[in-house]
Picture 1 (cartoon, rainbow, N blue to C red):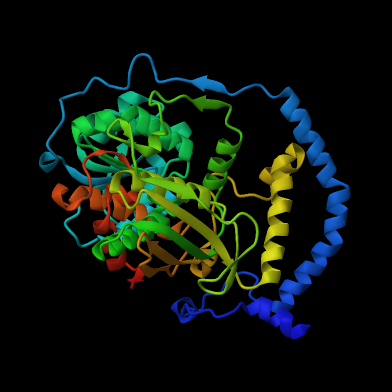
Picture 2 (cartoon, rainbow, N blue to C red):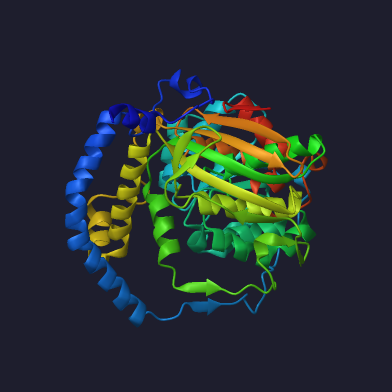
Length: 488
């Protein structure tokens, strides 16, 4: 029986070379068989208590909430329109003062973006500035990064402050979320001023709204508005793009892609604020388009579609002989790929499947138990309130330096073309991808937009995603600055 347990723990026939990450001393959570079995023993005790107490209470609470629940308020496109009165017209990009302005530099990820920019481009010709609401906090960031950069005071709740911020830079890089609360006004100004824009949102419904409202304006002014430029969803969107391009070079369209995530990361207060905003949002935007805006292609629904086949519970993958559980952001990644496929035309019906690799069957069961417990906490308001007050990080807080040092992300993608041709790709971020490398990803996305000639970028202007807005030039910049990538 122990040998069978060992088989389930290790998996079968794992061809992906683990030394890609183990050489850096990285490990997956729950990588010990003994610890996995011990955790299952704990759940065997806790589980019945949970099922007899917390679970019934949670069910009752949710039933009452549904009975008392009001329908979401339907929010329509503003009647006054989404255009603004420009001050001084639209400057040519060649005449603008800055290449990139980092907005939200005093937040957790914004600070990391400023630190990365200062270190990576200290001796370069890149012209940049930092921006936010509070002058004193920005001065502290400027002192910390040790670079004499300009400071621009701007507040998205005060639109008059955004003209100077947006009109004189080629690209805005913003880390100030939740974007459904703080991002719309800044994006609107960028679309109107023809200023490129990228953010780190993971809010799919908000991006839908932005496509519906600003895609046409951005096309007119030449602005590339690119969302999902951080951990959500650059790695997955770009590796899918690379597989599709590889298959196209062999004469076939993409039919399916399975992406296996190996990840170690921790949440920040800002990310959790975004998650709670999405979960408890009381408004619903009604698009003017008659189809999903993410599938829009110049006003009509694209013929290139994505089927979400993400891991739902605990599944075994024959591609690598490993067990996979659901990944919390897989749904958002699928939406991002949907938008990229709509414009890049990877294939007519692309099956997108993603899951998070666990070291063993037992580790997978333990992970699912933990997910159920967290779900119960979120669904039970008193527990959630206690967790938010005493346990979870607050906005502006995030993982420690040590935790980010231990963090990493590895993706392995297995793609199949419509004629059966196969290709595999690997992508590796050797430090925390949720925050430290999210800062690098969004900065490099902004620089891709600001410095790459338009004829080297995919598609034209509009509201897009990394794969269809930045494309191969972004992958090249990521590889140059530390991301390991291979495809065959």
